[in-house]
Length: 480
Ligand SMILES: NC(=O)c1ccc[n+]([C@@H]2O[C@H](COP(=O)([O-])OP(=O)(O)OC[C@H]3O[C@@H](n4cnc5c(N)ncnc54)[C@H](O)[C@@H]3O)[C@@H](O)[C@H]2O)c1
Image 1: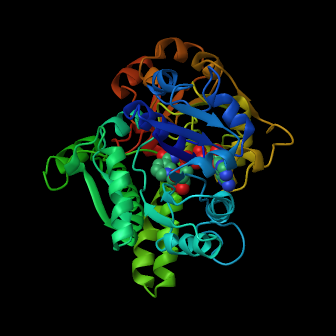
Image 2: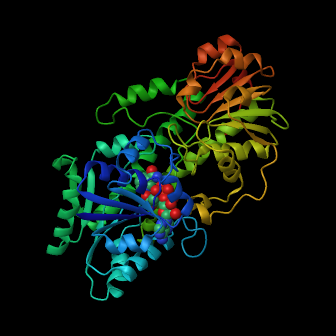
Image 3: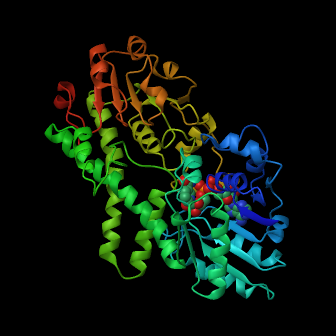
């Protein structure tokens, strides 16, 4: 029986391995992690991450050919194929701080693989890494190998949180990069055979190592760039009276552009986009390409601009002050159908409002109070380290309460900010919310999900990203 071991039981390692186990009953899959609490949760009824469809897949395979364990060394030493899906956060100190990827976790995983291996192995980069990481890993492995042969493959994961299971069941493509040698080719074919259990052959692309590594960074940069492009247009729409929904629909009808990923919003979040672009920027700078680096930096600048613009709009509409006003924040996850808050725009918006001394009442259907409180005190990039290495919040943030119901959050509030596009926020009883709020009552829709006309009929003053401004907002212009 082929044995696979995946180091890192996170948002990528967990779902990916669960699907491999489901689709390949003849393969034994072990997912290992240094975080005891994560592994305990994977072995319980309350999985550590929320992802539609994940529970059913895990329940079907766990204990049969899918195992979660903290015995990292045992499972690595027994495996034929070792996936590495550990954190690759942005460096916060030293050379490349604020941009380069921190490969501490990757390097320690590679050294451990070299230490415990007693047989030849294929080592698969599943984490997103800088171009040429495979070469560095190869050096660590071969210099410590005691004669054991390792083949390194790059197999970046393209799943999107919130639709991970669907994406893994039916991927647009699987990308496998390897060395252009007979041994490299053999390793590529071995991994291809795993995916071929359910992925059509024409969707499994094979390339050299560096192309695979760079393709992942490039794909995330292109996706983020689309969001920043439409968000930049949303600012112009507000200034001119155009409607961003109509503009992006018209633009997306061009078959060369296509309709996906053209929704204006308060900004992109998630663990990957910003980190991967910063990483790309750093690589460009290191390779003497400052103009290319500058080009990609703009994608992040527009994202930051969009979040600031949103906060400024909230403050300026409410008579230029939110001091001591209660603001309800609906949504903290970086998008719907996930409990992940890494780099979520909600953090920057909440910090901006707290800077103006607002009182916040936050509700998200999938994010715990502890997580929200920690997000508001953690330094930038700290959230991308393994859980047990993140700083614990010593105190809760004053002026922030976390509640378990949208109606509770909005009770007595002066304004409501919608920061995640959860379906339940579309169907709230906004008349009831309005009746229980201070007047004038404001709604700031950072995801364009609410029915503006209906809300205005109820009596709200409504701001929706990139939509024509109502009279009130026009009279209270925000600083850009
Ligand atoms: N989240 C996404 O949507 C997504 C999508 C594609 C690619 N990626 C990339 O995949 C990688 C993992 O991302 P994630 O979101 O799953 O991160 P994550 O933080 O959810 O999971 C990483 C896990 O690795 C564990 N870990 C770290 N060092 C370890 C070690 N030496 N031994 C054993 N376990 C160790 C951590 O405890 C953690 O549980 C990153 O490089 C990320 O950029 C993420």
